[in-house]
Length: 525
Image 1: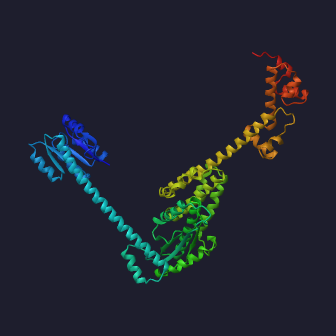
Image 2 (image 1 turned 45 degrees about the horizontal axis):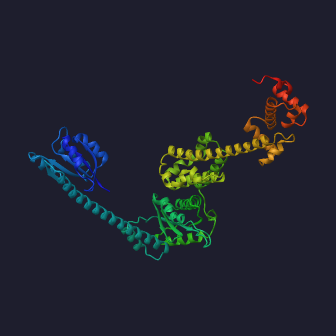
């Protein structure tokens, strides 16, 4: 990618000559802008962020030295090439003190500018290589430290290390794990049988999802024990709170992995331990718990908050099935607001609450035949969605967004199904209305509804009863035949769905105000 260069020169002929005659590309540069003085140049330079500035030293309004001084303070990485006349030596000395990269005396030819650009380009290339080398070194150091930390976490899980050695090694590698209590959560992905196709893309994404889930929470450490096993070590000062967090985290992982990634996992929660070197005991209990499905059968004493979260799950599901969007505010106030403060103080609780909400909405959409990730976009970027929820107001709007999408889809689908049903019914009636024996039961059977249910739905959706609709269709057909043919009225009745001409005449007169014969005699213009 070429470096960008910006030109500042008050003499328009000189500026255009440099701009148009220098082969910027061959020197590895891209001309990105120009200005007649430093004052006009400065905001443009801040906007385009050039790598190099070529500037005349003596200009009106803001000269090249003033521009160089400001650029040096605000954009110290930018290289500066000064253009100066023979009588401007004092200016040149000041420019050198400001650390300009190149200094060219006027008159200046194209070859001189290109030579200066090649020198500056070499400096930029060297600096870029040094930055890359430094970044690579920092990355290697970070990777090495991460590997050391993961190795230490696995040692704690396996056991057999002394507390003194562990604490010293943790201090050396920056692993702040010392606390009053410890608890292990083990997550095991159930890999499919050999004959079953596996979604390996999702399987490989799950560890990153779990890592992201706990990355912003102090006192939770993640390590991957194997392809299908992940370990979370939780640290805290309160044993009961730690136990609750472990259960919530385990439940949340199961919900998100199963609901969003479509994979089956088992999650085990170990016992709370007081010693760093006893973490392996909590891990052993978690291993045992993994084979003890379902998770909620594990012995635990749920506290008030846990019970609230589970009650709200049921309320959310019910609201999605039968609630209206204009009922959102009272629903939020009654069911979600009481959890608001706790959710905002704990990323774990916030995550739990919104995963419940998103998955419940997704299940509704899927049950109605929709593509959940299209209707509920938050499913595609759960972490990004939750990162924007930091206040109760944002929490309310986020919940409203999810409910609105799900309820709108639900209503549209229900309305579509009703519209499709009515269309099918009308289509059948229009094709068979000439049959004098056509009755409501026949039409209801074609749309797989009971006669009573069909009668209610048809009347509510069309605004008229089945009998009225059928009569209207038959009378319209009779009027058409009476106006366009000379066939007998008895034949008109038969072709309109009436086997009895007298009854037809009665119904026709009731709906048009005239008997069939008089209607035929009306002027047709």
